[in-house]
Length: 115
Length: 113
Image (cartoon, rainbow over all chains, first blue to last red; front, top):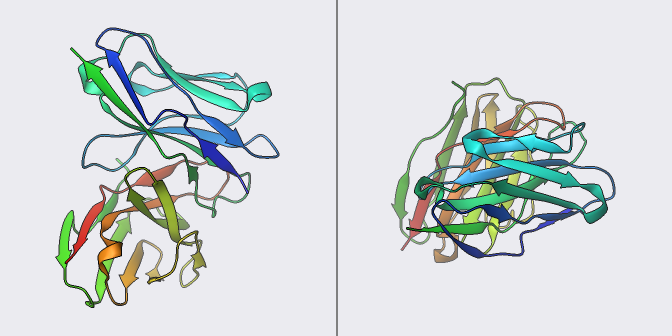
């Protein structure tokens, strides 16, 4: 079965500094990969997704992620964080089926922004 | 704007009560899901449905059931609520195709006392 690992439970970053959130997946083939963000008390919002093609994908709010097949990774990056980026971030993997299977999520990384 | 709507943001129920959590999507998606979210455990899939009246167990179905009588509506049922079912519940929908994203509702925070 597929699995997703987010090694960092919490990350603290100063406002204006760069950010990288790690995500590793376990799956036999190339999966469909997603990053979601959850603000406190809210549902999940899609930041970006990777299906095929260019391994560097751009998302909303200035985020990007890079798919590295050799490392089974899909790390999320942002050059300069803002206080409003404080949230919970989830990496997810989907299989290549008809979409009926639910996405498998990592346990999340809680991002704290220091002034 | 696409939307998944959960009927309640907050619910407080007593142990042993039958609880219904409702979810409606307006995107004509075939697939709908119920997840449970707990601190440190991420999102865990309870049940999903790929068509009207069809349902499949997810990773943690015990203590839950679901109903999908109409394409746009997917209900999660706690037959006899227990305190260990206190959690955040998230509904999602997804179109056909593996390369589709899931859209989430705002969540229902359920407290069982």
